[in-house]
Length: 485
Image (cartoon, rainbow, N blue to C red; front, side, top):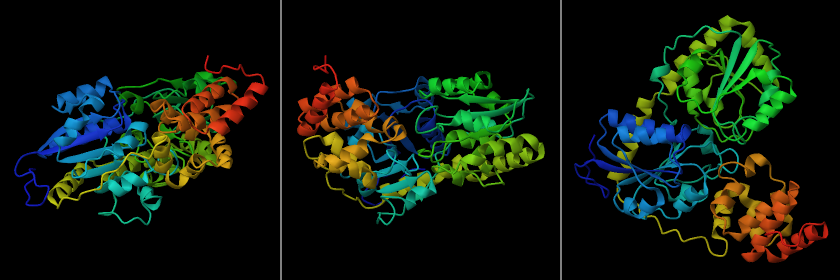
């Protein structure tokens, strides 16, 4: 499909130059969906030149190989950004919140169309839709219907209505998968094992099924493995939890499973998880909780079970006791996957949208100035959170009372991708990010580490009186007088 239009963005008869901008290219998840998108567009004959610009220099070798096989140019990160933006017809921004992705919103060129494909549900901070992105993008694509009902999109007038396009997955190898005989009852989880994704009480929820012959297989990394292992050991069942880390080929894993047990955290950012699509395509009945954007991916009692936490164990026990129900829901899951997760249909609609935004008249967006100094990264983060960022904005304005709310933030908002600690690590010279990190660390009882952050905030001129007062109190309590040493 060549783009040939008399509109202001016409490319004539040449191939459309698409710049895929993505926070990073870790294996799986959104990076895998992006690679599937490119491959599907190429297979459909969509005449386009695809280039990929990761905003952070994190590139999975598997993703690198897959892009190279398709002849897709992988640009060398931020160093290539200026030239890439000057030689593109449309930016397809695969968005979730990171320090780099928030900063990129401010660098969007004024006359290049931007299609923002939101890869998170937007139901809980920090992975929400930044108001600045909603204002500046030419089109907003969602991966979960619920995102349209939340700030900032709810009630906002957009250039075109936001549209739901599930992140595509490569499901063909899994369709019609034949089960492999195995011992016991195998409940499989595939995805991130860490804060903000897997339920913090995963072990207890799993064992609440009361099934002595059940084994729980977990595929994926994320830093939460030690805590999960400790919980399994404390429960006296370490041998029943099989943590396999990243698994490249999931086909034999899913073929040797009975149920896809996918209890996610209440504040999960999940929207159209590839692993859930894959499990359903393989004919595994999923059991999920009603959190994030994934409940709309499963039709309760038709293609799986959507249950509250207190009923998760009972749902597993029900499927264990009733092989007929398990088979019926598994077949329903496979049908649902074929009907609702059709990557070809998704990419055909995406191609049409890219054609529309490049064929229409040029929409010039105003230049977005850097957030006013001082502490631009902190201001950017606070503004990106929308209504969830009020405490941060109040703290920036000098409100001491807001600091208590920041100090009390839960780990699944602070220690996750896009959260406060990630922002601080990405922008370590911003004094207010250091100050807020110090508040959280102090509340956790990590006093020496908190003192180092507060001293760094003072050195940067951030919240000097408040940070100095807190630091003096720490010294009175016996913290060494030179916290930076």
